[in-house]
Image (cartoon, rainbow, N blue to C red):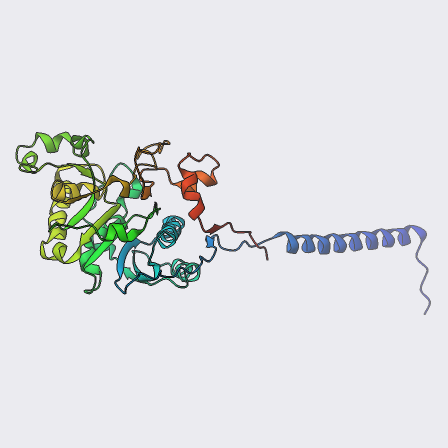
Length: 349
């Protein structure tokens, strides 16, 4: 059976349809290729750090351990890394140091980072149960001060193992530029706590008018000469703290705060209420505090006159954040040499 040949017009239509189909298929394939190459999956944004060198004891070292406690949290991890490096670097007996890290939220990468950054470090980690303070915390002037882990220092005697009789507690926003053993060897003279005191500070401002106008509450400091002290650097007699029930005393004040609003600054005021005027004073060189500025704006501040053993960026401004924003304060460059942070170079899949 013979078939008629297509007319020229019909043949032209077939050719046009074939070209359109081919172009569509090519475009679709090209688009799929482009989509496959452009969609990228970034590696999770977790900070990475260079490995610190190994630090070894000098010839004069004995086997006596020095116990140091700090909190461990991903938000302040960069500060913690710098603090630990500074302590090791300036220690005569770095192998005698034993670190005790407190954490409230399990973050596997944080623990891994400690191990890989400081493979020779002696340290232990302890969970701080946030429920212990959840109903006792009152809102303060800065959200960071309201975190449960900020109150963990009150519970050290309940958390640390029995062989730890004395401990140095340090905040994560510090660097030490002296041998930490000098602070460790401070004579407590029967006191439960040692810290630098700042008696020139206006002590009244740490409590509300409601506190000072209450006849009973305002008698809290009778018989004492209370001075402000910063709780970011303390030497604690752990046994005396436990025996003296200092944790219970501070919890009692925290409950008063829930009812009457007698202060504004997180975990600091309970320490002042219980221990101001009752602690062993340490040389100011061991807490050059306030370098983070005030609690509201974090403005730059200069160094206080005198020798320095420890720099402390208490306040809103943190050196790593200001350096990253390229708006550092002068004092932030004193922190920078201890920064082990290695910026992530985002890989793409």
